[in-house]
Length: 402
Image (cartoon, rainbow, N blue to C red; front, side, top):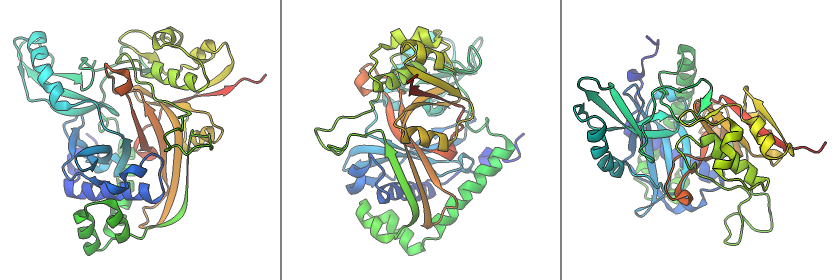
């Protein structure tokens, strides 16, 4: 039994809402790339609740809306054990819908488990950041639960078919944390709480009552010690927000539910102007259907480029190493438990007021999940807090000049 019980550290929606507003305001204050359009928007006060596989609330996803139109999402910790209240700022509207998935899965459940009694579904994070609908089952010869990916509706295995793989299988975010890690994360969360509570009660009331961010920014006079951010939009003849600008790095959604590493490789190779389909890439990465890819895909990156890229596998990733890759204009694979994403930017800021204790470090993630039948609508782009996530590996690449 863990020393810090997950059920004892659940965050209220009202507190999480304040953290969501503050997370967005900090991003606007430092001009975090990609969220300029949020300035006239507001945070919806009714979040989507996402549960951990342990049964406890894990995240609150607050929509950032302009009228009724979602411009993005602030993912906020629903449990103090997550560590940082602001987990991620996701750009753009989502193309999956949990209610639509639930309607479709009713007939699927009856066909797969005709004699089982199924609970109401629960939206869960089955493998960060991937979401699914989980049903608890009862009856003879049925598993205790079944999880369907919320976008592809594929059944998600409860464990990987092979170790150290990146594909699609379920694991619990909270249950994976050791006692020492829980203690560290609680300390970090409490520093953020202290910063939030350092605001006057009057300012916090006005904060939650304001209808748009400009009014909120007038309430809080943020003070910065240092801030810097960079994304791989290195062409300076147009600003990245201008209509004629082109994107130096582009999102590619995974075409198969466990193609995350394959799609990540495709993104990086596309940046270096290598044009491969995902089916062409998969064999070189050691892909196996249902098992995904081994976490070290560096050899495949080199083979696919005839050794023109010198790729490296790093099992000791740090934010500083990621920053240095972006400074050198090199995107890379960011590996987390069971999943691969591409990274094409970083952000760093430290605040003197409201002080949160320590630096705010983010990576700019191009995530090939979620799957979508229309590939142009799949995947997600978001700014992710470094300290919230367990980082397992990088795969980096440099042009081989030898």
